[in-house]
Image (cartoon, rainbow, N blue to C red; front, side, top):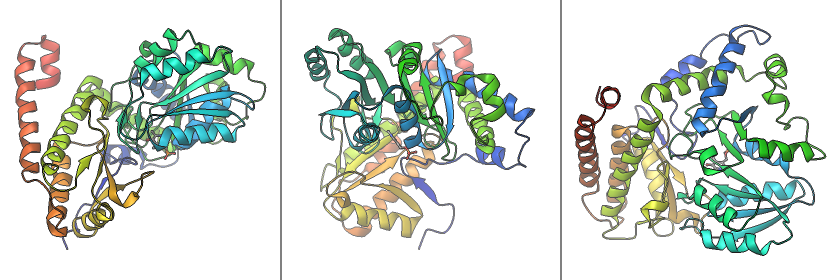
Length: 413
Ligand SMILES: *Cc1c(COP(=O)(O)O)cnc(C)c1O
């Protein structure tokens, strides 16, 4: 009834694509052999490294997040190797299954669906691995099925405390560019991501960052599939000419534009925007949860992502709410992926190209849906969300007054 107009995708990827990115892609196919495309490709490399917080290497593949998973594994994991999966939802388990498909033995520590990785348990398991069987630890910065945010720096500290020298591999697909991440400082050896979530580009680019330690393991890996091998992809001469197949021409232009948008805003401001918007969403959920069945999946705010939120109602209600929001209001919410019963869970994507009015829009839509469907809920969710945004904006204005001139211009300008 109210759906005609601009539809809105509030799912955890693909995220909302900025017009600027789409316009940058709307062009004639470029010459792939020489010229501008090579320059644009060259220009995204340092920006991608800065985004992940690394000075090391980045390889670009045509593919989605699953492709980046397989690319990363294929370079360092082979038949007979053992990997340790730190499961906080469906996604890290999926990465482990992929390792299994490549012939690896998978050991899993399951931390359930509502808590971050318990560091003491990781340390104990690695300490018990006295023969050093575990070659890599697979973890996710954010598990998109649960909205759990993990302490990656703490996981590396647990590995160090256990005196274990496995590779630390981190999936940042959900929230690179949304939740803070520092690959080198946190001691991550391999990071994987994809372009369609925080990076605001249509699905199609898989990204793998790796350091020298990971590359040394690659050198000793007996067989690496030719397509996934990262070595030619960091060799500028080979890469610019051949891209290991046809270049992802338009995606490179789209990604270039998205990276420009991030650098114009400033990484810290992008993180702060995601932080504030997440707080507004949590405030609304807190208000709804006062009465009725609604629950936020992760109770501890320190263990929540700023990019995706998982919440639940009673069986069947989440599906009904999603259908109502889409059919009646033109807002699509995320499914209860990997959860049981799936029809009780739904997710909100708030990653990338998202601002205050978008968040208030989908929160208002959910509020209307709860009313229309007669699902009991606490009142005042929109009030709580708008108050949160107002308070944060005011506090930021005041904070800017005390900062250096450059910062003032950046955040208050
Ligand atoms: C989206 C996502 C994936 C999978 O990415 P695809 O592009 O759908 O293959 C993997 N891990 C996490 C954490 C994700 O958010």
